[in-house]
Length: 433
Image (cartoon, helix red, strand yellow):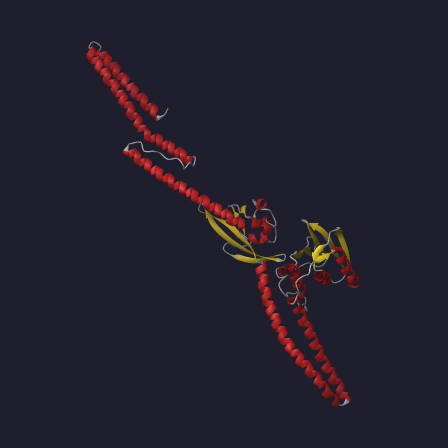
């Protein structure tokens, strides 16, 4: 039973008792009895009116509480003519107006944030208190290789490698640049506070093109400077050697032979130096590709035919696997041939002698995909982060030109490529045309 009903029952009961007492006491005096009953009736009506007026604020408060609980911030109250009640109504209406404005502002901010996240080229991942992904924007899905809806609910350790393990090991407030195949990604770990407790979020940014452009500009300048200085020195020194050779004709025969051998050795070293610098200059002077229809199967067949003697000498088996009949692709045949020659030679050098190279040409996601998997020892962990760094090499006398040239050619062809360890052992180079 509500308080209002209780008060109404009490008011009715007390007037009924007083009316009964008045009837018993004044029933022999009709005039006084009638006056008393009239007074009780007026008192009852006034009591009811006062009771109703008393509950108007409570009713308004209850209605306002229900509207707030339902998050209805559009309804307001009109003044009722009671100063105290009108002051309360004014406070309520002002509060509702501020809540409505605040909710609208938050909705606009959330909409703006959603648009920024959707358009951002940087991947954004937010985690819950159990370190599971609660939000992933489209860029995060693209950089991690999974749709955003499939990333939701995963822990950082369960995200695709190498990004997932790197994120899991990244301390809060720090950043790191990692290699993901031929790409370079910058990872950053931050924290936000939710209900007083910290939650993690991650940023994943692609730096491949920026780093590539910076590295290319740096090594182009360096190579041009070195080539200029070397060429300026080689020419005069060679001319000087030829002039000195004429003076050697006046020497005794026994001394002349030793003299000419020394000059020949110096001339040979100059030739090697010129060849050394031309190798680097080829990367800088790499012309733009001239795409034409190219049958990848025939191209690989021809390259394997050229390498057959060396494969036989090393006792390495080259096997085609899953050779699908694919339509020609638009590439510069000569440049792609350079890439495949370098990849296969690297595979042979990694194997040494007695091994296997498996090649496959398939269609992955609608794109021709060529893979070269060797049975060598694979890539050491400390090397994988520097694979496509310009002129980086693990060979004793290597100059790092093969992968640098391959990187430049495949990038100009807009190909996706990667070099990583194969689950079954060895290394695998993948090219998606």
